[in-house]
Length: 93
Image (cartoon, rainbow, N blue to C red; front, side, top):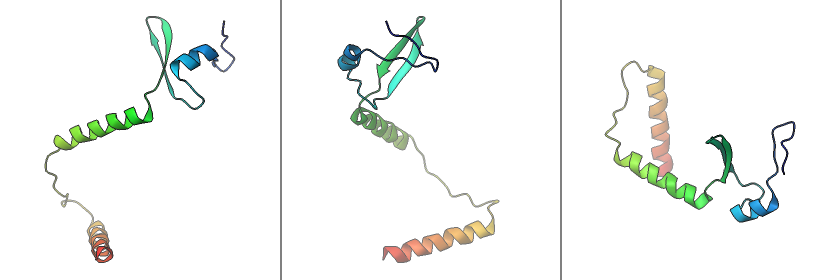
């Protein structure tokens, strides 16, 4: 049986780690469910990236037209924006 140390840490038995594919550095999700602690390895980086790409695509398709904010903006901010745009145009040529 595994014990909890003074800092709240536990060591998962090697057999469990191997069956779940938990290696050093694997991020795990720890949560309570029905009065028990559940430990699950996070998805692989590829699965996480796929999920993020789907979320970005969904957010992009739901996004409407945007308008620049001009009222109440400090004139110095406008000058700075214009200077950055000019620099980008010159650098892009």
